[in-house]
Image 1 (cartoon, rainbow, N blue to C red):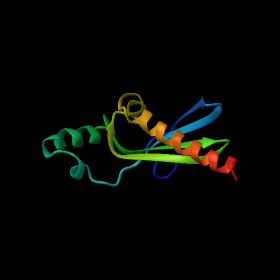
Image 2 (image 1 turned 60 degrees about the vertical axis):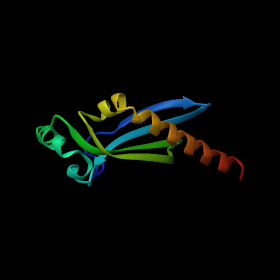
Image 3 (image 1 turned 135 degrees about the vertical axis):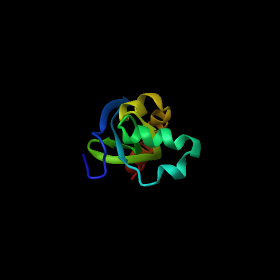
Image 4 (image 1 turned 90 degrees about the horizontal axis):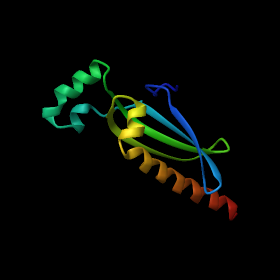
Length: 115
């Protein structure tokens, strides 16, 4: 873990269009106050569950690597989930972040191919 990661990252490898991508999903410390992002009527429950360790409050960051070289990343702040796995499986955002990263990585690969 790096200094601003709040739990161990999740790594997965997937081959897309013949390219082996390594995806690293991290939960980074979120610096925006919860009170600025959520409705006042929800804050007590949110604070209680974060304080009791039931929920995590974080910024999700996904990085994509090819042959050990980072080619793209995407981030989403203000996440509240029971775990990073919960975010990955249940939020609906992980697949969008992954698609964004793959699109950017393929653009970068094509730039280098055409040099």
